Amino acid sequence: MKEKACKNCHFISMGNICPNCKSTNLSEDWAGLVIVLDVEKSDISRMIGAKTPGKYAIHVR
Image (cartoon, rainbow, N blue to C red; front, side, top):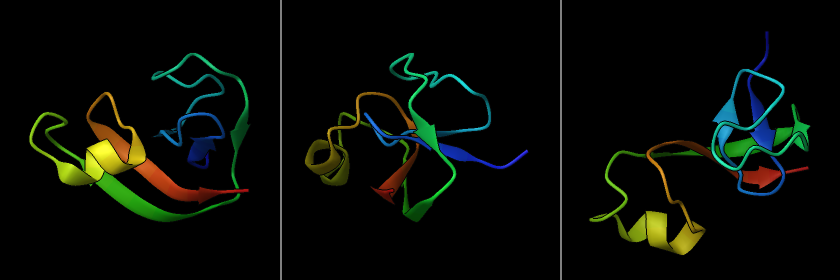
């Protein structure tokens, strides 16, 4: 099974439903990867709007 990125929040997961925002609007066509470990201390997580730790796609088509 391929990893899919949510078109709404860019969270990367393996299923057909985004565990972050519960959307079903996912795509296998994504590029770039950001791994957020601590959303409180990360400037990058604030820039991309990450609310939970995990993998996020930079660009989702």
